[in-house]
Image (tube, rainbow, N blue to C red; front, side, top):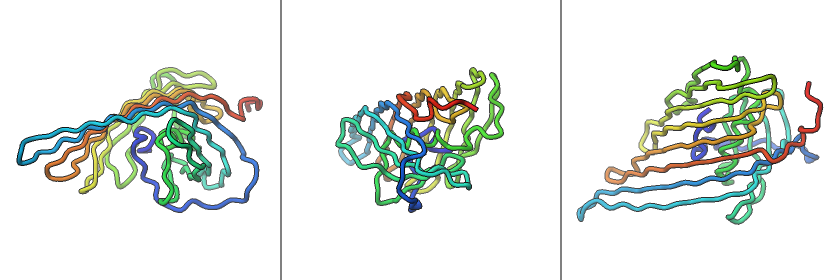
Length: 232
């Protein structure tokens, strides 16, 4: 569930399975805007120095659902077309709990890392989504921390969730992160309708260098090939 809050982090590093070519089971498109502001502070012999950078992009994330295996995963091809040069679609496996896996040699866009965990088939399984309900989810290993979900509003087909959490990895290349998010979610088709998340990640790159990144992502559903299907 870590990636659910922090789109700047992607723990998947496994080869995804191949499936027979054919038309996708479902096609979902999101309009995505994201911004990442990074500040690096370093203590040197001449005194402290600070450098900042800003990365922004906006475009369409197209998610082709390739397969829905019986183990609860969802296999998708995700392609993001934004201001940066277009990339070919990347095959990603979404676990039932929302963890992502992809070929480690293939970069996955920040837009995809932010949105895909919300398509997990088990995201709300066994949860009470009536207004006022809350629950905690422990971050998946090797991360530490807790993510808290609170239902702000719900009806027969939609729920609005407030999500907040703190997650860290305790090792030399680890990090500490704090995130807050709001999600408008289709509880029947299991997909976000609107997603707004801000994450602050702090890393100690070396004994004298500290890096802080603030990431903000907003996504809105543009189209869904299931939209014209009769609801169960």
